[in-house]
Image 1 (tube, rainbow, N blue to C red):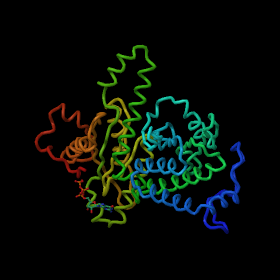
Image 2 (tube, helix red, strand yellow):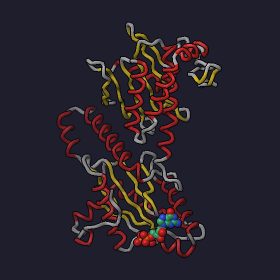
Image 3 (spheres, rainbow, N blue to C red):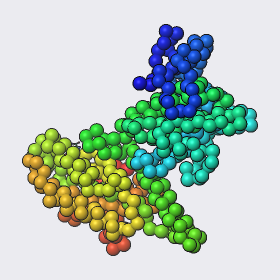
Image 4 (cartoon, protein in one colour):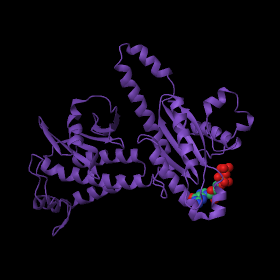
Length: 387
Ligand SMILES: Nc1nc2c(ncn2[C@@H]2O[C@H](COP(=O)(O)OP(=O)(O)OP(=O)(O)O)[C@@H](O)[C@H]2O)c(=O)[nH]1
């Protein structure tokens, strides 16, 4: 098993099993130990770097700190961190760190859609789950995958004067710490009872979905013959993302009649039904209590309405152990590209409030209600707590 270990010389970076496929000799454990023992200063700088990047709770700040730490430790010409979306389908973000004319490192976010030949090894590394290396004149380029559960969640590229035998243990170690630590952060985004996303992750997931839909639209527009006209449509087109709020009806009665354990069981079973009913790309949240949120990528309101109605009926027909019949009310709204998340939530919540006021066990869209003039002054305030 490869890993970092403590040697007789002290706690040092050492690989006990260099990968056979890396095409270059990894530094032997004694060699690393020797260089590290010769320089205790290296230890403290290393620990300092790890402590400083794992200090962050925000993933974007963590990313910046990671590339900066690695660049400073290795006096790199460039460090790049690429990350894949949760479903692994595309590269979600690229952060690069390069020195300016004065030698001070500068961070910059790159457009992940831009084709950059200097990043071809990054893509190959994520695709093959293997370390990649090349030498460009005197610069050594090393790319290591960031692995979690056997998948590449991203890759780390280091361009430096260091030969890979020296830089690889360092880059590997950073990649592994990063994968473990972001794994923990991801856990903090989940609701403990249901395993669905929690409310804290809502904004990030919404931005991700908006970006993904926009990207898909742009690609579709570019594939068509009149790009300028299509780009016009892109700007003025219908919402690409929809947000639904779903609330169990009379949930208090379930708790009161059967106790909280059965109440929790209903929440858990409802979450399972959601997983079974909605598509993989739909993003499911438990916002707290008996309230759930769903984000969909869809071009037509009619589709959204049909999917939500199907779910509402499915729940109404389901027999919950002990409790029997349970119904849900649903409100939904389209999300514009420049919407504030709180505004979109507020609109969906108004439609949900309408459902609660009009017999429950129903599905209503904000746009429809609004166009029909059914959202009067009573709708001015919904029931959800906004950010
Ligand atoms: N079992 C359980 N109950 C919860 C949880 N979180 C909130 N509740 C309860 O859910 C109930 C929600 O009650 P209300 O907000 O009045 O809503 P309701 O009874 O569903 O009524 P309507 O939404 O108007 O149909 C309260 O009694 C809360 O104590 C939870 O995690 N587990």
